[in-house]
Length: 498
Ligand SMILES: *Cc1c(COP(=O)(O)O)cnc(C)c1O
Image 1 (tube, rainbow, N blue to C red):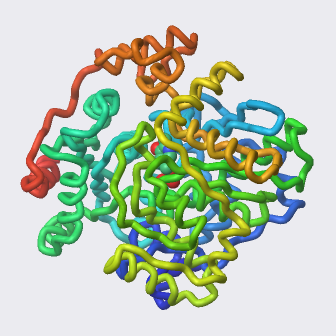
Image 2: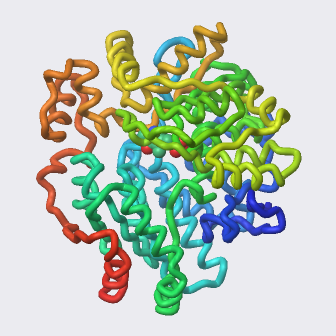
Image 3: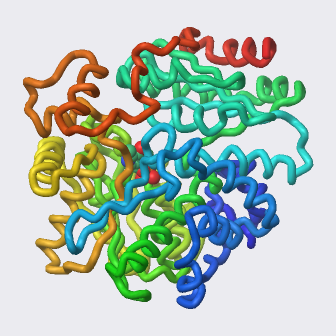
């Protein structure tokens, strides 16, 4: 299997190269040349498999330059009960006769990103070995919240790797900050930056593009890499749980083998829902992929009109992991469905220079066949959390609530009541304040997020997840702070003293 850059069809590499590089040098993303197929018979055989076995099966199809033992090693070390709070790794919760919630948040940081970031470090390490590179990997990441902690947990104590996470002094929640500054592991480094997320991100980008500094570091036995969601090594593992969800519905006799279902995905960078599209193209019986956004509804507009327009205000919402204006992984979808691959570069250049692009008719048609999109605002999100709790006695986080509301809109408008999987991307305890005030009223809210967490746990009678319990009493292990201008120096110090 070969992987092609979306910006240059002559740039063709194997999977391990794509994973090692993250983003292609021409600025493109690597996409599979052909999407591997799964027959109905094969799907039938997968019914008896556990999550790890399904994972090996899917990963081997995409990463065919890895052998079975290597994939087995990666999978077994990523998806296990030491890291996940269920041996099933991902749980399916029945909401009503047509709706299944796919709980993707049973990993160490309680967001769906764990499913990719628990395995990425192993895949990356093997990829670097395969390219006969003996240097140590240094992961540099700026985070606005969920990604940094999930990456830290994934890379923690992985030999031959170090991870440095920069988070903005302003703009991460108190719980998220606590999660990061209490991070264990000898190879983890967490640094706060004076400023906001953009300052931290710009600082990291500067380091990546500083050729002189990069050469200095790389000549000292290190190689930089990033763990962000455009890495192929994050995309492929996300395909697994769509298969797993479908197979579980067949096992529970909720659908017959081969019956089509819909999925609805709360979407930001378009990574999660794109994995659903790949699953469909592989032959998993999926019908509509429903793209749910919050008030940053650039994707809703795009899927409805075919025009992607980033010239709009940024809105801070109560589903912050979807507060995104440029959905990077959309580029992969466009490349996959365009008959003329040159379109993509044209679109991306347009986006760069004018802030928008319009897709050709044939692409729009394909999107209409596969996708549907809508959005909901903060208030509707809170109302949905409340109504789901009163109706089903089930607690959802803000991101999952957006998906449920959009599904309700879809069903009303289309009359299509096909059985549907809702991708649930975070534990409600990660957004305790919003969930608490949605269900029990704003007057319950405390200034201290940990108090909100305890209150929510009491009032809905659910235990606080293990890794969040007493997080306010854990030892702070990371105290380094710096200005955006001194981030480079901080990296240098860390690597010199390590
Ligand atoms: C990252 C994230 C999303 C968005 O996923 P994409 O793959 O970027 O579309 C949704 N919900 C939560 C909780 C997340 O952390």
